[in-house]
Length: 191
Image 1 (cartoon, rainbow, N blue to C red):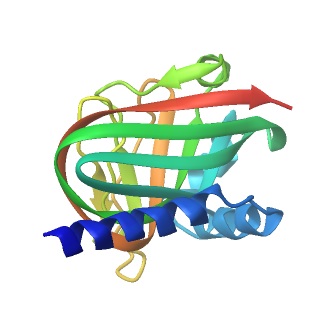
Image 2 (cartoon, rainbow, N blue to C red; image 1 turned 180 degrees about the horizontal axis):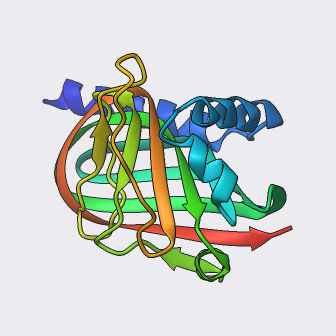
């Protein structure tokens, strides 16, 4: 058991160092191209008031878990600020994973609410995964997330704006099993 916990701690440290490293423009450009190539996401780029993008969010847990990521916020395609995501959860959970995330804002009200300083998702927030078999959670009450059959099949999970926001994730790697309750906070800083 001690060896397992040591291994889990090492994995959490490796995930954290990859997430805490400075985000280069390449990461954002590459992540944007992944989302723009998804048929489920393309319509949101045309109609959204703004969006935020997280190239890498690292998540790990063993009973108590956490996630962290840094991103950029855009309004009408122009960079307006940076944002950090932090999440703490408690419950059955074990493992670690890394994923990218995009949040689209339907209108000015949703954008202003998100960029008001500190924003927290409510229990009804859910994300649609754009990769086969991937899942992600995005809610303060442990809300479940949607998943797609994947781009290879051409079948995508359908999503709509909920309370002015639509969330998409792209799994990068890792393995995580969880049934937990937690809170996800975003802190915005304007440029």
